[in-house]
Length: 257
Image 1 (cartoon, helix red, strand yellow):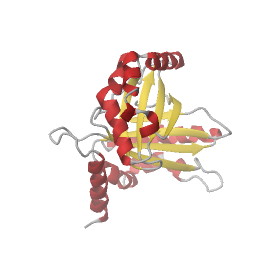
Image 2: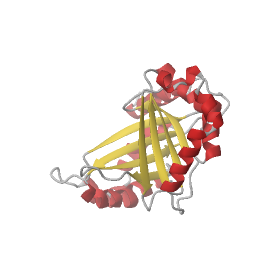
Image 3: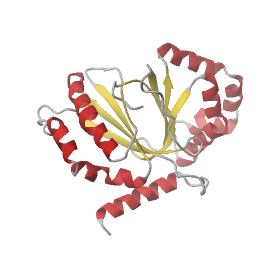
Image 4: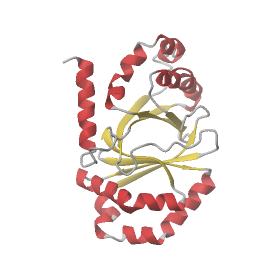
């Protein structure tokens, strides 16, 4: 078996395991690669140049996307830039690096980025997670990139796979509907297939601004249906969620999401 075929089959197997129990007649859920670049704020321009002029256009040529690019506020001279890539299948995940390497236009546009010296790198490291959309939201709901918006990325870690599945169930049976009603507008909800801090449920929300974000969360916390749902013993956070990571992100001007 060729290496590319083996890798593609392996990723497909992992993604199938993550969505076990879903309706076999339904279209397969989307896959999301969520990358986190850690870099010095002074190198942000170099990363933006690469992403906007080389990476995003190359993925569009490859039929992959949309691609979202979001940044967190710098802290302690460190900046984190998140890149969200939407994939329709495991095959595009497995074959993308080879297709980029074979794309002459990409290599030309990425020359400065790929030619960075060891003593002046564009970034420190890239952390990458592969996510599979949950059955209750199998497709991304892309906000209008022409409008002002703020993104909220949240990761719910669980102590084991059973607990993680229970949190997904909680969203699908009620919490996601409450989110939509109170203004916590979802972009995607997905379970980690490969990556750090597993098992986890990762999701992204969109708001018009910070005031809108705070107002929506306040409304959610006071919502009667939410108070009833979280009072169910099997859905208590202490039973199914061991850690929550919350990030407020600003989209890059060229972000497609």
